[in-house]
Length: 142
Image 1 (tube, rainbow, N blue to C red):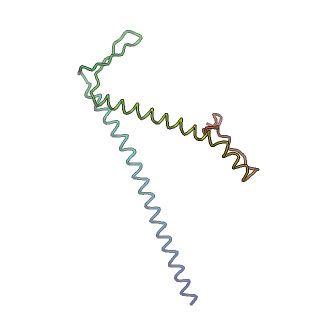
Image 2 (cartoon, rainbow, N blue to C red; image 1 turned 45 degrees about the vertical axis):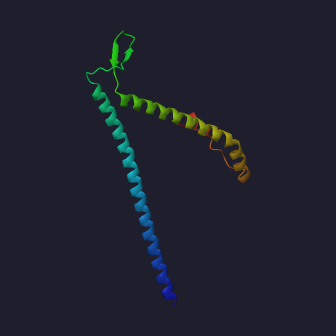
Image 3 (cartoon, rainbow, N blue to C red; image 1 turned 90 degrees about the horizontal axis):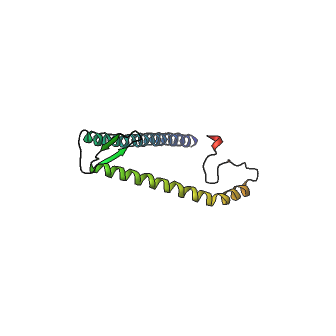
């Protein structure tokens, strides 16, 4: 009777090992796909920027943007519509990210005092991580 039990335990161990290896394989595949998707997005963005600059080569349209430098030189180009849309979306994304970052810092600062009190009640000997009140790293630690 004891031998059967050992056999079942060994069999269960190999099943767990097989499951763990499948999970590890799945994680590896997911990480690889995530990386590929990120790099594909970057490559596509660079391609579209290149194509928009290529479309501007030697052409002039009605929507002309002129920049006058300090030396009095006039640099002008006329962006196509999709470049204007891309620029607007880029600025909207940057603005959204900036506001999200500020909101996150505000929420962290709001809950910081409660978190410190809670941690001290659990472990009075605990040392602080010395993060700023908004959760950012101290300048000296960079």
